[in-house]
Image 1: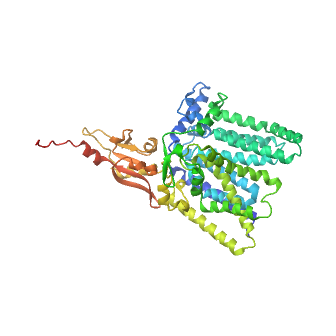
Image 2: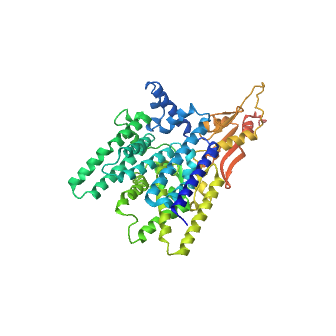
Image 3: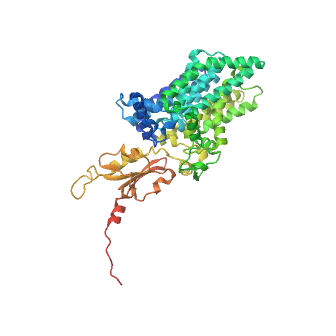
Length: 536
């Protein structure tokens, strides 16, 4: 009944559904907080190349030079040729990267566990708001995670061909690693995984040290094309990174000790991003991933402990180990290093695909392990289906803010949005801006002389996140005290900063994600001349 062919068709159907979902909804997502500066950086990198390397403005623009511009450079190029509004185009491009990441995870699970594991992995990522919802607006995190997923896939294939992998395969590995480094210095994780696995491969496949040294030497020689390819692409997308030998180290050090005056929240506790506990990332993963995702991980551990024989044979050992390292190494590194963190799992989105692969394998192996326990097996199937349906319905109700999804371990959605980070990207301001336009008269405001005087709007986010959606009746102001209206998400209490009458709310599942405050009466009372009383 449940044949590999069936699961292959189900996987294909899921990809078709995801593709249609992307095409039908990509223009419904709001601009994210960092998106404007990232796109400016892409344009500046394009200027660097079009000026024959003379215009170096990109390397003086804020701290963006610490990042690679792979995604932003592509977006800047597409901006010149595609008839799509730039912000919607970026969201479409980012979502396509997200789809490519799911394909990579599918291929890894297929390689390790067959079509059923592949299908389950695709399903898990599709119903994970931190992936399928984030892939539209997290225009650096999702592309980076996708490149890391492909680097992991090609690393697994390389492990199967050592010590003499094919040239074609090593170049593919180099492309994936180079593109990852062309986004963040964190792409070095892929290099670390590769050499850890290479070291183990030598210990496993050679009997004495002389043979091991020969094995390692041959492997390194055959991997040289991967290194060259990765370096060329890193240099292309992150030119600052190769302008001096110490630049990659400076970038790594900056991100490892990156801190500024900003707060985050975890389980109701508000704290500085530099003071987050070591378990901040594991805690967020626990409440961000859907319940069926967690069941898959529990199932994998349970099956591994219960089986009398290993989950995999010697030939599969390095492939499985590669996925385990990719899923756990960054988390363990984070717990030990304790860098500043905020926005939940956002900066570590790249661990989600390998964790999804492990969860998909866990569900698949759990099904096989329960072959003799029919009722228990059927119960697990019904529970998993029910949880998937529940998650899909929740995501549907949250649309287009799927990325704020929390599972039931965080409590109700109202409790989760109060005690954990909510719409930190301020995506709901797009809907709030549209709501403000509808509530205000279509006739522009005029001053005493009859001249058009736009309403002043303060935005608790980047100005572009309001200005991009408001018409000529409105003007964004940096002087919030003079603002006629105030747009804000409710994340981290930003909506409490300014007073005013609430005339609109962006709600999902009974939770207020953003508010519109009318401050005109407040301003009028402040401007009213004071009438002096009689002296006594």
